Length: 309
Image (cartoon, rainbow, N blue to C red; front, side):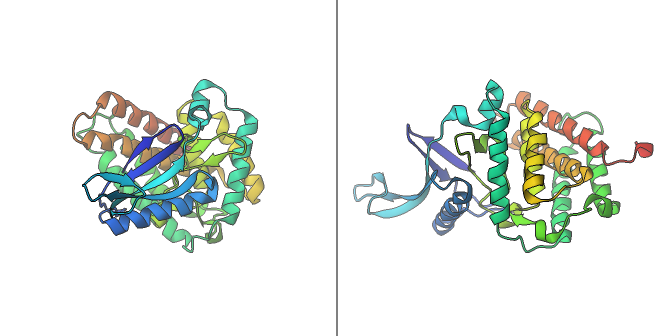
């Protein structure tokens, strides 16, 4: 959805002028609004990283310039560049991430969730959105054009849909509407910087409904992505830190459900790349989708009573 330009000290993010079912970057007004919203929302977890927005202007001679007088033709989000080696995904791959650093991330998120605006939606609305996501997942993951293991995606999606249809009471035990907040919406290791103190960037700014979350759904996503790149140990630390900080102990089935749903979403997004114009690199995206589905399969199996497996 964006191009990102790196300099030694700064990052400039240029949004593509597109419109989809879930975002609108189609006009100059919409682009400016979304850029301002990105800075506002990300200041919650990375205030000194997001420096503001910058106009791209056309000069009298036709040349383009940043932040000068002239006709505004586009907008950029300006950020301070963070050290690549301190991003959580890089730290996981290098083996440098520590328990203390993950605990600090957990503490940052506890404060964030406590201060976040209430979502103002019901649990029923939240679960209906998850059901809609599963329907979208099914449309892609069960498409016969993709060479997935036979029945794998359908079995996973059937389990998750069944839970929403027949097992909600067990699933949402303890989930209350007041726990739902305007969270991050896209918590992934590449958005977490392990400096002291840590910062978290790149929240989902373009659609408010998609960042209305149960905090443990947000955390399940981050835990899933850490697990996917080789650090399953991070999940236990984060969940314990968030549970203690918020004074809430989510049920194991709920966390398994969130994890499986997020894994299905990531599998769907991986396969969606194969629908893009060439080059599509199926050697990357198909194995990645299968790997996510494998996690979804294992997590969703935990939702099925042993006698029914």
